[in-house]
Image 1 (cartoon, helix red, strand yellow):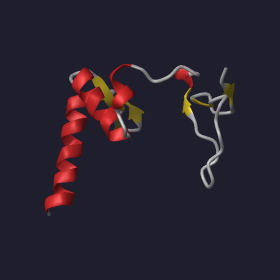
Image 2: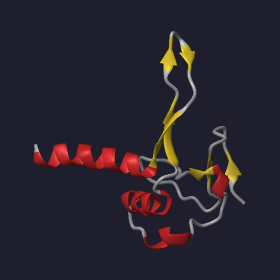
Image 3: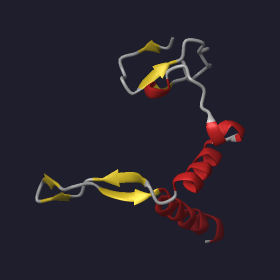
Image 4: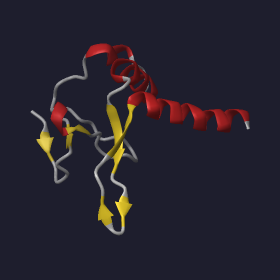
Length: 98
């Protein structure tokens, strides 16, 4: 069983080993001690996990924000996995080719 900490969104896994300079590793609280399963098992980097997620969930909401108008928060505006992937690719293109 994972141990909880003061941050309710992340936990320290029960088998966690401190890493020099980083402290204890953390993971999403909703995962508890369950392994990350599915198509992510062969992913070797966070980027690969993101790429798999984009392929799987393409048009679903991914990244949102609430615009402020005259100090009042408006309804959330969402970007899909595909839209965020395109933004990242555009930024990467500029850094690579410019």
